Length: 546
Ligand code: CFM
View 1 (cartoon, rainbow, N blue to C red):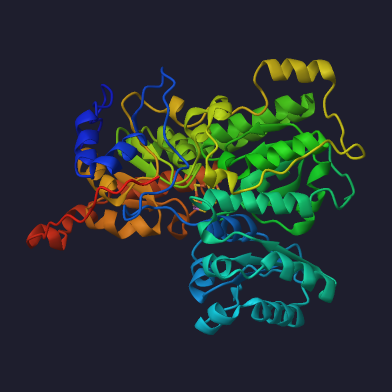
View 2 (view 1 turned 60 degrees about the horizontal axis):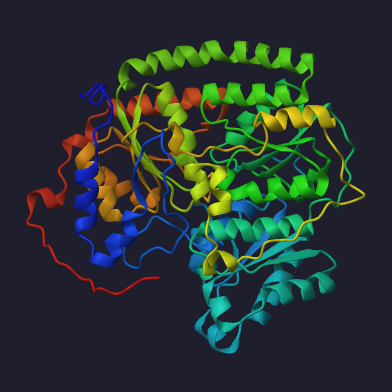
């Protein structure tokens, strides 16, 4: 037990950082150094992010296709999502995450459980795969008669020049349903992040603003960047229901295309995962006048804070009172669970290397447990997710980001509506109420080590140095971390636990983490390399990577 190991503050990790860099060829070290920052919340520090991964470094990252199909479109239940590519791409983006959905009735469409793929073969690579894609779309249509089919390009499709966008247009004509193409070849950007952007651009231009639902409810919101992992969206919906807040759309956990089409009728957008969705939030504001705020439903305190912020926006005493009532109702159970776990978790150490928002959001839950985050980083976030949105104008646009078109959005004269009177809006604006996200670093302790796009080697060194009580990442890292004797918590799929959002989610998280940090099982196992000699080699050249 090493409770309160760093109670007087985190140690200076400079020597550790040097040791990690020393092993790399000079040019690689120079590049990696820019992505490893010893945090000082009092300073504005720059982290190199959203740049190409160095080949061979063993990254945690995924690809553009994964971001487009797996993350953004995957959770929407009434779209048949067809992967045009080799079967591995479809298989890996199927059942590897825990997107859930609830239909409103047994008659409603739900294709989430299915995996549709064109299963490209060598002959398709040589002779082209467009006909095979058309056949796959026809087959899916004949079987299910869906209203929407989406097709996604993978790397080989782009390399041989199959045009999924044209096929989608042709098939829209032929079948009379909406077939929507996504040119999200895996290599198109430096990570999943490019896929989010491609998906969001197409969803926005193709769907948003095309359906006029009955405008019910006094408080109408969009929830952006919530993907219903492990049932998180169900818990958020439970809370919003109690408050009579109408969820017009969620992008895209537990969603339907009709929700996207109606999103322009909401009066406020709440952004959960800033990284994946800030594009849509901005476009909804420019085109339809819907202001957006950053929220976080991960952590009980953060949930309460987010609800209060929503109430502040609507400025209705009835809602404000109801929010306080619901918080007062939910908190005793949360507090009891927290107090129980706290005895075991206080002073324990956590590390988080996850995606583009969770490495930040989950620090709130660890804080509630009295745990310290000693090191954290994103796989593919941009500088604003580390340093705050104020740095956006200073971010250099490189060839990779230029690859993804920015939509030119203008005010929709017919559908645009001011949501607030000018005076109130100006007042809230001046308080920094809207479009505000300060990023991860300002909330982290001094000397915490922030690392973007961490490599396998770096994770290993971090574990040796800090000996954390829990390491949070994904399935690719899980078993390596466990073999090092450290409890490992997946935060992409929750290891089939969860939900972790909202009040009930916080309780689940406290319980799961208490068990994990109290278990000694991983420390009792000795890894093979501890018993047998290890072969050490070095492969590498002094090649310059752009
Ligand atoms: Fe946003 Fe996400 Fe995440 Fe993400 Fe992802 Fe994800 Fe993630 Mo895995 S959209 S950035 S691309 S919160 S799939 S639901 S868990 S890496 S931290």
